[in-house]
Length: 92
Image (cartoon, rainbow, N blue to C red):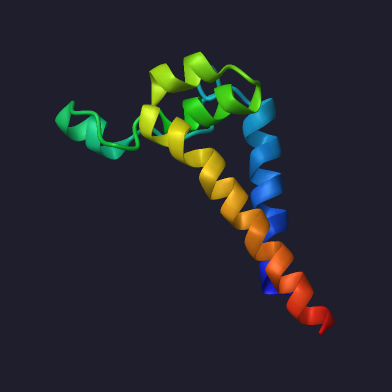
């Protein structure tokens, strides 16, 4: 049940990210490392990259954050696999 609630939260967050562009919406917080040091951290641009990925703009996502663009599909596949495994165990 907890995993289903977590999956629902991820889907809801994805829907918000799909609808609200991080580049033009002030509801997303700025990166604290970049704000205080001026340096880009490994996560900088991940929110904008995810927004671009959700809209099918892979090249733009890669320019925002290559690490996230390469890792997000694998992370999503792993999450779906875990949900399927949990569902199978629940039926047994």
